[in-house]
Length: 225
Image (tube, rainbow, N blue to C red; front, side, top):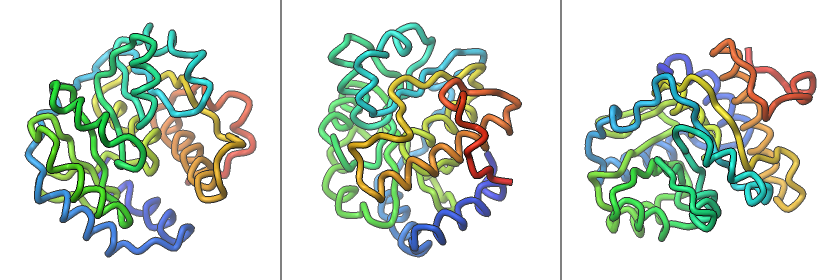
């Protein structure tokens, strides 16, 4: 996705949450201090079935969906659940808010991690990213991309993973471990899940696709033009 296509949606996200674009840009610039150009061909998904593993409790019962995929992109704590089930991931997508130790270990063992900068995680970036192996760090932002900090579209860890897989040529996307109505989350997270749903609906329409995770839900989604 080109930034020009993403920016109108990004501005709507900022307005809805009351976030400041300048704060996102500041976080991006902090992450850029550590970022190195990343060879995206390492994650080429052309013609592949990609599992976008989410962090809902249902993932425990859906690990086989990830295991059966050609490629696995996992959001945050989904990596730990899959690891417990013996399922390797090809990429972790995280904003460092839950399990930064897992992210560090993955980069140190050669597995790429897409670490994301946004307005309120600058302390986490400064604390954890210096411990990563930068050769396996894919740095991302939701603001305008600069230098080796990329923007492939998306807002939450999970939907960013889907946008990245799309950018990398994925033929099919499947979604183990997703729950848009997770009763265990607070109001802010619930609002983010609603945005993740909207963004996936936007992505599937851009692809001319239909994601199974949105089946029976489309009529209730506030579609992005």
